Image (cartoon, rainbow, N blue to C red; front, side):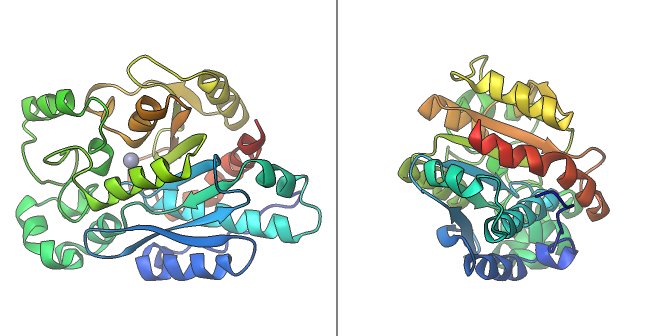
Length: 298
Ligand SMILES: [Zn+2]
């Protein structure tokens, strides 16, 4: 991994769900297995590449929010980097690490939301009326049904709903509506099932933006989590932070911490206003990808 990593997936066309899944299929032909762990509200396959031993491994997931496609491209390129490294014959011990602790890379949890944020209501199929009525599709973070997936997990969800209502968020909209009940959405329910079945030892959810890492939920960080976050921050120059207000519960990593008491992180890639321009990707990748590889052996 000495030379600067190539980024084969840096154009916006890989944000199209079909192109992203085709890229994953191409990588699966190399050193990984392609698995489908769910289906979006519009029936799009939700896929991951699994490297090494599956049980008890690490999960890296991205693309939770419509305006954060850069996190999906980060993970797609990260999977390509792992394939390149494993095939290079000088993998720096990576195959040994993956043999002990596998990795699952799920670049896009919310393909419908990414499509809406890029192409507007017509990308929402049978939910196009809902998106049109909700408005603000250029700022769309939710899934096709107007539910913010990172508010839809069963961690402080009922209190979160009261806070949302107090903030005037009472139904489907572009962002921050937590849905009618925890895991009401096919994407969040499938991701939670994937975790329940795979028994991941740690998860990291990649979002944008802020150059931050979050490691605790409701004031609690599982054993070792704070040290892992500090180390990740030191190696990337990111900052360890605490979410506040409506971002402090109902999220994927919140649920993972509460459900399993194992380390769960949110990493906010890059800095600026979402959607970050894709020209930011190479610099983000250079800064974060090497630490994300080493993280597997910590
Ligand atoms: Zn996000």
